[in-house]
Length: 479
Image 1: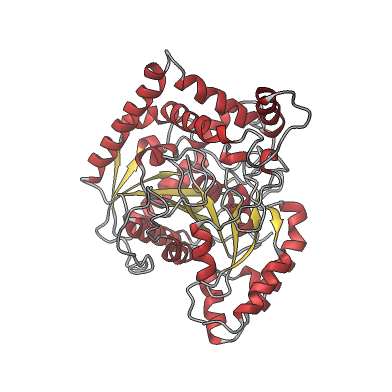
Image 2: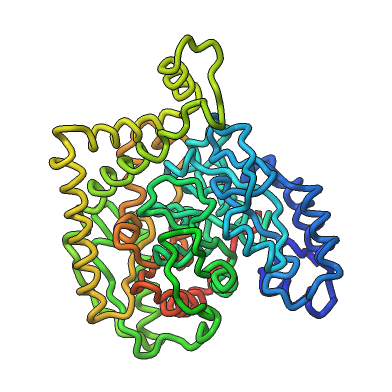
């Protein structure tokens, strides 16, 4: 039995019946990591010994724990106590957090086994996982292509069966776009639904932690564990816990969906458009009402995002100065030299680019012209999403205008790279929940359907995604 190929809910059933032990499952996954990691490079750190010890401890634990014995990978911008958390940046190469992020606490309490920390674009700034300070990750569908970003390592690990589930973070599409590229399910929850305590901040008003999974059922399973109020995060919304598995297979009869033109923008690849429109037709055949709509203000989301997110990043990353933690440059003559040299040595090119862009947007004389105007555009986007949801239960479209591109294809053109997130960025500006679910292939590579919901209506988003999953009959890649 190839346990590493099982979904999380299949493993749970085997563990609870006593047919398979957590140790057997973890050994199978770690063996899989040893076999394929040299090609995929999904991880920055594999916790081989710790995972085996944890699995052995679970042999005598309560089998009804919600993630009992399930192997999980964690993106390396999410703090893990006593284990390096680098954000794939040389400036944090030797940083070891003294505490667990809230979501990691929840995973441990639920009986999950953390098998490693996954690669990412440095400080979550990128769309290809090529901006890592250590090495790029490769797409298991085609090792010459990118897995997407910034949660490319998490998506690739799930796709390549190097973990049953993974955590990622999403600031402008960093869960959904790699999910689309790797043919897995990726959910960005509503802003405030999942605690950000212990997530290393990129853009605090946009960041959100969420699951990457082999199917929709597994994404809902993880949401049941991590979507809990946390008073340590001031943005965590205090709502009654939801059961995201309830109603998952109720179908979409009578559900009103809007196929948004701006989620199939100019330049969308023909095969991507065909797969998305085919998925919309299948949902309609399953009983949903599908109508084409336009939300013109979404066209301004990309420039607004690339003012707001870098502005917040320039503030958040100011703490990396070589004084308190992280890298400290040697032979710096004074404090100003220490700051400058540490940051020059520690930050990669993309991080430096965004810090400078953000600092410029916030500087005297430019704040009103750039940052303030971007905030006004964001308000218009929130308004227009609200108007759309007065009529529709969910919005659908492409997760990305293209399938996975080749390694090195866009690294010399930052604007081309930024356009990879054209369809996902508006959702973060609106603070809404959205999922990417595989809906077909284009040129032999996976295409993701993005489903966007009302605030805190992840249940509907997941139900539509499940209906799409059933109708698409998508088969995951076997590396």
